[in-house]
Image (cartoon, rainbow, N blue to C red; front, side, top):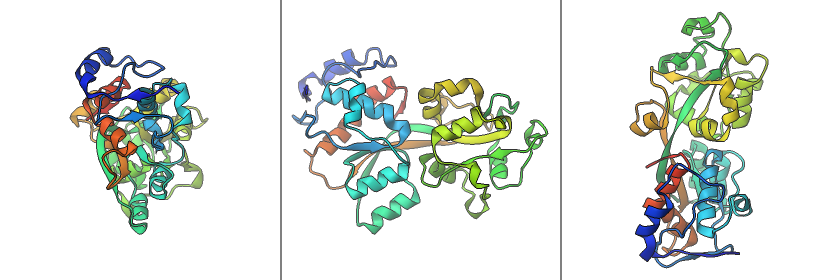
Length: 306
């Protein structure tokens, strides 16, 4: 297995040469050696066990390929991005993971850590957005925050009430453990006013949510939500049949996420156990991800880096 040595003396040259064409991601990750934190050597034996939110998978692949000097295809031997965001936070607490690239922890994940006397260090590294989506056959292109709250509290039930066709709104929700549901609860914040949908309108995966909006027979009446990066970078084949709604008249893009003009913007994080020694592989890797070169890699992968 090829090894990568992180060398401080070549940082400046690498940051210029490696990312001169940022935004042109390659299948094998960036070339050249990563930036140094001390004089550390990542190998297949000491690489931290990495998990996280599904929308952060391309970043995890790019990071792993960069520091181990392997192809993107080979990174699946080292990282596991499966299950809900909450499940991955549980895995950090339980010791199944050493490092996460993850979206906002749910209240359940925070409580689980507290119940197990576990503390983590959580560092914001980028931004994404919660987006609301309809089928491309739906004429509605914009909702206000109050209209979204009205729909999900059951006060608005027909598309004609928000400028659409005279047809019932089928408002899908995600499962409680998902990262997108955590963001929904933060931004829409209905508490006990959130309507309880039929069980078939609670979708257990991000791809499942996109499928019911883009492909099901009643998709024209569907409304759902997901995170912007996942839809626009990981499931681009769904975009032809999906509308991403503007909110309060603001369309979502990397620019409106970066500026905060779009209302439902939230950070995502690198997360490690607290009180690790400085030379612990997970801490070295977390520090590199937060470095200038790590931010350049995020931009290369089309994330909005902090």
